[in-house]
Length: 115
Length: 114
Image 1: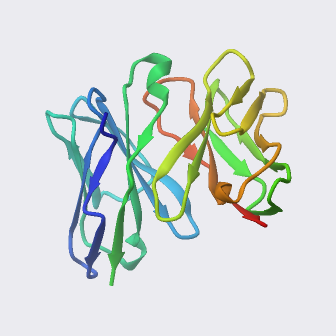
Image 2: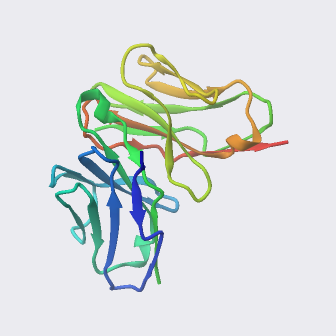
């Protein structure tokens, strides 16, 4: 069974540009989560999508947004990039079915560098 | 809201020595608890989890953790570490409800040397 996949592996942008990161969940998983792992700040929750809807978001500005497609894959968009957006962005998926939905499976991440 | 404190940012140990990585959490509701491991330049892998039932949980590679509700702790232990255990370890908590976000600690870097 294929795991969570993310693309691209690395992304280099300049300040003010927009970045688009993509995630494909494990087959059968309906929930997708996005996390930011910035140096010195640890892992922070960004967004949660389930069944195509945004269910929750972390303490990030509105320029961080995304969507979930009918096939449950997801996109994270970061507008007006700032230097401090440089980080590893991790996507995770889960079943969202009672306790069994508590476990989240992570992808390898997209390393975003803003110059 | 939940929060997680990993008490040690770095833990250096020698190969075959025992190790304990400490994790404390706070929450006003029941929680699920997790330990994830991140090897260099890789994503997170689930090491073990506590959802309910037995408070002692084990992983396939010799790690174990014990949920202690009174002390709000979920410390990770291994009786004898290997060089290959060198990695960053994250403790995480979520509310006792599927679909809620994971709240992570800042991580503990375990460095095993010979």
